[in-house]
Image 1 (tube, rainbow, N blue to C red):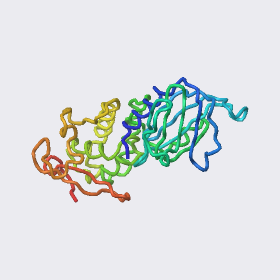
Image 2: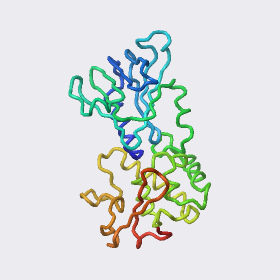
Image 3: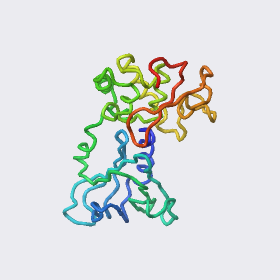
Image 4: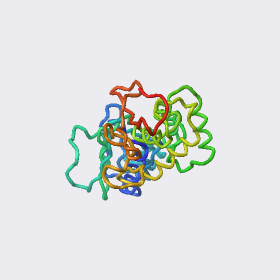
Length: 275
């Protein structure tokens, strides 16, 4: 599943390509939304909240008075979704049967490929779709109150494994499997360490710092080294030498997800329970 920085970057690319343009065509290939007509509306902006993506449209449009009021198109990438942007008339860079949204303007065509949780809602009510989330690590309104709220949520279950807690979007919005492993490495604890044994505020600030640093990068870096094979401390480095101590990096399943999700760790650099 894409991390919050990937969704943030996708939203900014959609905003740059579509904002300010009138939709010449709009197709949502979902049975429940097949009759929704966005044609004629102006794209106002695109943005993200955690791993959720919203595209905002002006009121009015082709369907007449019933469409008065700004509306938003919600989507989630989950494991396999993406948004792809191309030039008008260009060949699609995705199989047609995988394309679930087509938004066309004079400047660009945006394709929602295998996107999930599609919904069209009044912009004024889009917050209802994400109100269950914890503080958005890449939110423009992030402040010390956000830190305090995130710490409160993270420490609500002291016995919970820190790796599982970091992946919980109701605790922090934006952390995925990459950052789960990388943050635990930088904290010096295994992902199976109970939250009570971790500096929760340090964990929250580190999550925010890493996502913010990578929000505009196409290659994610947590080590400070951009050389191939050295950008990440432990993620997907199972069996390879730890970049810090040289010990073989290990991996193991954590959580009950299907398919299972693996966490990576260095058994020497990280203290705490190990599977």
